[in-house]
Image 1: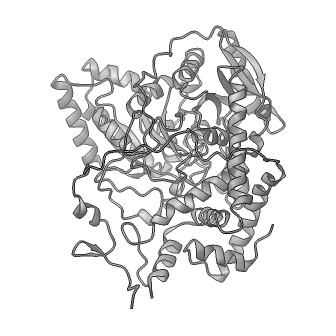
Image 2 (image 1 turned 135 degrees about the vertical axis):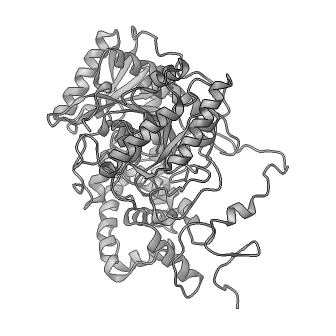
Length: 95
Length: 482
């Protein structure tokens, strides 16, 4: 498998990371190197092996639907780039 | 400044020193040595001394715990209220945490002052501490060399005796590999033993916090503070509180040490091979037996890890979008432009590479071939350990294939850097506890690490083996001349 420059740009956009043309070539070479390492996996026959997503076989813990946290909105919004009246400000999404 | 946590706690209990005095001594040493090592991102003497004064007051009132007053440094991945918490990234260069991680709460409850926040690879992605936005950490044994990573600042701080102990996190070897490269002792617990609440996430199914100190005994005392159930981490395990120091004095007679043939193959050479061999002989003298075991799928662990960890990272790091906290690009046209520029400017190259790998392996048409296949290999790798532990009590091998390498030596080729963790990654995939302890030096005077791997929840037994080895050796007492 080998990624083209277009593939790199497509992945970068999926990841919401701007990659300019000059950088893309560098990422292409590095990502292809990493995928070279990853390709070793394909040689292994894993027919019938159950995928393991987690180290412990746990079921999701549930709790009562009760308020457990105090209101700390002001403290949490103090570290935000832009807020107004308790709302996070972002560029306009709906015209 | 070569005191262990245990000996400092004794001095405090006997009234021979105070927490304020101790903290001042370490802060002075940090001030003198940190410019050369860059082990700390943030030091705040005023905050540390307030913690210390509170610890002394607590002791005076008769309410001291076993480690009250002993200062400790924290990896900058742990959110600590009122402290800048950067995770080694420009993305969080302005993030003063509004809350404490569970690990930080535990150390506060124990009365242990925070000496500062230690440098690390950006978002814990790296094996040399060279990906930090705040500059590389230097190895106290040779400042032209790396301390390993990602907990490189914590490792250098403990090795250079800038702190008696530090916290670290380990996703693919990030406690054990830097412990090996700096000649200290570090432990990654069984997945789920320490809460991940407030620990900035890299790969959630693999991340686990643990202690880094001079000795196994100190690691046991620190794990007693760190471990515990926390309902805010959905993977935190509800288990009885245990004393991780309970097996420290258990003799090694009859102990079965498993030696995986895959760890002693062609990749293990020179001084590392010799030092590990000598450690095995030492353990045999103490009464242990060895048995050859197989981990036939462990050679696939690096490949599987570089699918699974980036996949989880690409999801976890999507939260850094310039909206709720952290860096936001100054100029943008619209929302997508803001996201893309914020992330392009806020993340360094290694983080971007891993996010892109993750986005790709999870994308339509590639999921089965990469992500699902890697999860199946993870099962095979974990099952190898289950089989191996039928024949032995603890598994032993090298921690890292080489001693500390030079700054810049492996930065050009990510794949070469990834292979630094060839002996540690399988342990994270399986979720087992593992540790590294010093077992010698190479011809250039650089420390060599010995890795022990325990069965699930066998931390106490593993720490006992390490402690018995340290009673019979003095590698862990060696400190670099600084």
